[in-house]
Image (tube, rainbow, N blue to C red):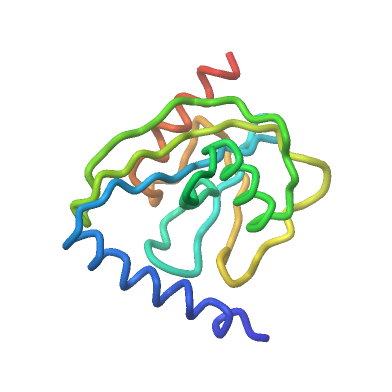
Length: 153
């Protein structure tokens, strides 16, 4: 199946969720994962929503621990089954959709091999030095990179 056809449910949801969040103003819980290999970290571009560079991640399911979400999202989106995660703390902010966003941030060492992309969600990946995050990245990406650099010493 073509990647564009598989991506349409994600694109539809990315258009409807902001409306729901604007009206209801819920607290949205998510994760962002810094996956490192040597001096570089893996950034992704999604096939839906904001297409700027971001750390892999996603929304926390009901009754799911953030670390379990990190493991699930990285396994689903990139094919890495990583079990050791270091917490980098949380970011708490009000998004443009007026919802409160609480993002748990994690750091993990990449597994062997290259990522196996879930093409319906991930359009592109890029390894970049933590100290040189692209200017075209989601809000908070540089802050998470600073935390990862500090954690790595």
